[in-house]
Length: 155
Image (cartoon, rainbow, N blue to C red; front, side, top):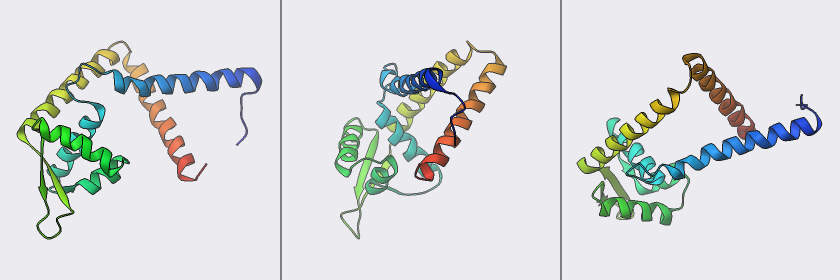
């Protein structure tokens, strides 16, 4: 695919786009008003979703799904367990398999985090008109789809 923009203008646009994407990515680390880290939040969301579907969740699945090493996921789980947000049970047939469950305290803290995020996003979106909000959603989805297609093709 040829670049419709040429020269310095193209370079400047590429740089600004990458800066904007990078800044958005960094925001996840700056959400200090949340009671959970980004990793903790992701784990609890996944556990909540899987339990609603009646599925069991194993440590190996979490590591694979979140694309982190088993030691890294174990550290996160240890912290969540210490806070009382999850419980872990060793498999009866195979002691190497450890099942992870969300506790009531975990459900409560996840609910608090989701509410804080909802309020934050509502505040951000209130700065835009409905038309701009819809346009932003459309553009983000279009950019994500294009990136997924390119990455999926190995590009």
